[in-house]
Length: 244
Image (cartoon, rainbow, N blue to C red; front, side):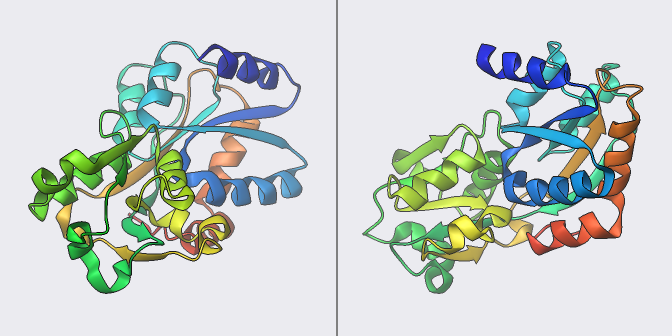
């Protein structure tokens, strides 16, 4: 944690900058939003990605992030309940989970893909602190596959690392964020994906909030307002996020 906090401290001390803590499923979508915002406002916004649960712990322990974008709206709501938020919690999108693989045609096999004899390792994000991992576990339980696949599971610290497991071949198949499956990085890997039915897990309502540390920074208010607008909404939609 120390190197991250030192980096954050460097960013936070810079004049006219914001530092955002964001769930790693947002890596490509939020980078695009920030790029447009920086151009429009001649601002400097930096972002550190990680698992929503671990970022929540860091903010709760005083990490100097100005805004927090979580893959589970429950985390920013907890910040607000604990007096650590300086704005209302905004639901910026609804995420989805997909099965992704280069090894087999998951688009055809769908949930049966996990039973394919060629599958040795299955990657999901760690359900202990990653919302996408929680939803992956719920979906596998819903389809009565958890017991069958449990011994094959490998856990990413966040959904971005989970995606790296399947794109690198460390896992044969994985449950990842639709937003990452739609990213240029994963599309060029030659894999295919299947959208897991939404009714198999709790909704991935994702939320953002200005933290207590970011209180009083006009740039933070401007950025959250920008995210609520049409231009940012179109970018989020491009990466598979729908309105809650």
